[in-house]
Length: 400
Ligand code: PXP
Image 1 (cartoon, rainbow, N blue to C red):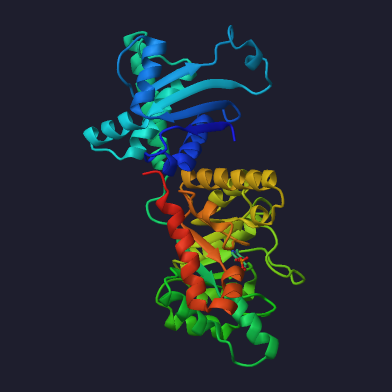
Image 2: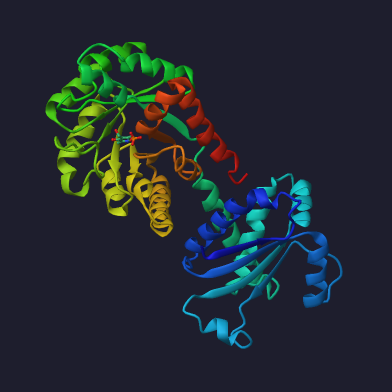
């Protein structure tokens, strides 16, 4: 990670904020086109800050933030590195807390401002040089902080549960049990915000009857996942789900593989969206985290995109996983900025969901296999509650 955080103020709020602080700093670096530059952030208490203030500025007492840009004359060795080192930012957590309290802000808000201020100093902005530069730096700070606030979703990330695998077990015997509609009711009672059923053309798990009965009994929201095939479109228009998610469908696949190629099927998908829109059914397009697919989804009138998290979940090395995560984060941000609503799913389980749930632009996660699998051991009610706990706690560490 290009943001290197050191926390000396260990008894303060700082450790709780470490991960989000790193995230925020990276977000600002990205916005400033410095995504691969490195920066060091040191969070200290007032005593230590007083020492830095006295030693480097000859001033008595603590201050809120100090920036030490990389000096190309004295840091010749470091400046010769292939990575761009911006320098160090030191923040006093005590002063930040006090200032937040005085200004009626949260600690997170204050910290965000101090980080932005410190980074702009490292990049050459200086409000002390002249009134014009003061204006310029202030305006840039406001712009960045407003953009950050605008890219945060308004509510908590919701958990929608895909009950297809309950039907898979039923179909293995060709009898009536277990019933995915009963499973859906248990999921709702355990706090699921929605139920997803994928009605495949080959009817390998969910049957028409399941969707029809669920339509009558559901208390939350029915998301019908489907391929854009004529027969299924007619069915959707007839039963009126709360939303549909269009996915690519191949008969031979075990599960949905990869996102839709919206760019290549714009006309057909636009027609399907128009048919749904006429019936007031919002459409989500299941896509890979790819800017071209996001733009195409927007162009043809999708309301949502569901970002495919499969490659992130299947990643073997940490490096690969980080890379896939960054693609998802970036895609979700971009889609949100463009005005699309953003869901995510596929392959999420009890170990990899928290990182995705903490993303501030994602509205809903669609999870099936991991929850139904865990339900075999702990029961469906508990399996849902455990996943909800993961999704909800991921957001408590959110930066507020
Ligand atoms: N989202 C979409 C579009 C899917 O096709 C699936 C799988 O049916 C899921 C989410 C849920 O994936 P998983 O069962 O791996 O949690």
